[in-house]
Length: 250
Image 1 (cartoon, one colour):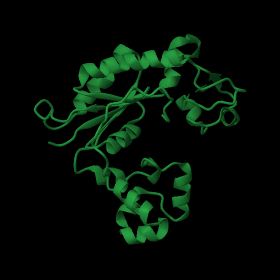
Image 2: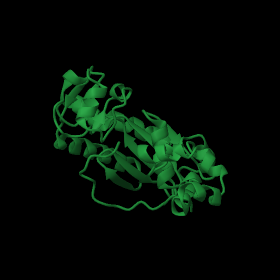
Image 3: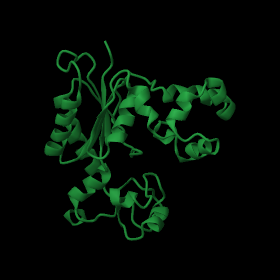
Image 4: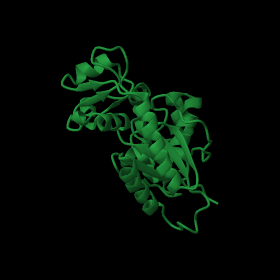
């Protein structure tokens, strides 16, 4: 029995929830959530307009203000996010046999064992779920489908915003070959910069290198982990746990 997972990621979740609670923000294209302009906090979420200026989740508010001085800054309330997340979870549980939330704005749906209901593709079911989340919870989401958690997560990132992407078993390597290394989990800006300094920028480059050649560039331990991810190997286990109360990386 092959594993079939969906990763559901709510698009600009914190921004959209704040907009719902303050209609005046609906038409604010440059919106940053996390704190007031002069606060010492970090960005929880930024509208897609603000992201075009380089604003990202986890960035200090001060830096976000320098990058996007015309933006509107709001703090938001945890209770808003909690209630919105619960509403989304209720929708997901009505459409999937098993739901595991891994943050306020993301979760995995396990469709393993549903081959009789969905013998070939889960695209139709994913599209129905995306529509239901928008209709019943008032939020947009992107959905990735894959044979393990890593591929499903990368696929949902690839589908953003408001898209669906399916990577079937056997397609992992080809799907990843067209992506930059920073698309892989664990490859943040600093790691990507370090790898780029060694001439590695794309997943396809890692796929084409032998392990020894890769180890000569980055060290054996990192080479093993990097090669494994570049081939699309990841855990298929989705472990239930209490919904996170922290802000996701988005």
